[in-house]
Image (cartoon, rainbow, N blue to C red; front, side):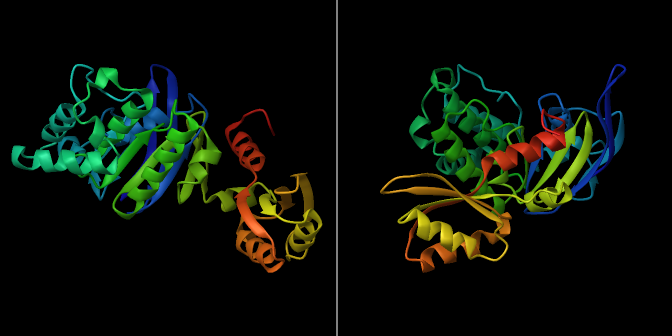
Amino acid sequence: MIQVDGLTKYYGARAAIRDLSFRISSGEVVGFLGLNGAGKTTTLKILAAVLLPSSGTVRIDGMDVAQAPRSLKQRIGYLPEEAPLYDEMTVGEYLRFVAELHGVSAARASAAVEAVEERTDLRSAHAELLGSLSHGYRQRVGVAQALVHGPSILLLDEPSKGLDPAQIIEMRTLLRSLRTTHTVLVSSHILPEIAQTCDRLLVIRDGELVAQGTEHELEQRLGGSGSVVVEVRGSAAAAESALRGVEGVRCVTVVSGDEDRVELRADAPEALRPAIARAVLAAGLDLLRLDVGQDRLESLFLRLTGGTEA
């Protein structure tokens, strides 16, 4: 669905991106990761036909974006880093305006606005002025304006930026719901958050693509072993014994515990989570949480992007 070859963009003598090449298939949700200033926004602007490249090509479903930007924009939904909102408009007025800009007929615009407000949980804010909305609601409107014309491709630049933990969970749920109907490229500099949403990852550093693949594939490339965090209700000794009995688990550490909850960390690849869950339940323990170790994800991201860990 998206084919990028040799994409390069210069601002004067500085190369914001250099020789990027990647493919995204129809229906994939792909995370675009990199530190601030790595070139993510520039790349998304070129894919959205907002900015022309210095060299290289972008094809959307076989069509060159540079050759047919106007027609392709109707198939693309784009959320910039700062949502393009007009504070004097209501939510409903603004979404109708955007729909008609993208060629949705007046007869269909009302239904399109209602549908996207339902999907982004904005119906209660339909008559609210954009200028009166909280940051979380403004981000929802930003996603809604990218969806309102029914595009097949979504390009989302930091959709969770500035959101509180509850709003991040809501945004994550929304992004997951899009995978059945859209091809999505979503940028972020937070690997733990984006890894829970995306099928695979593209990692950019200083304008160059340095890695791509699933989280597990990237970890294997760097020689990482991974860790799994388990929270149970029951005996710490029984939980530790159950985890040690799973083939492939190398080390188990009890992180914390009291009469009701015990948290353990197992040095094990993410792929062993189902086996670990079965072992915990077979030991008669209540499984309260099972997740990948966040410190591992952060370390992986820093190593790929040139952060503080090497």
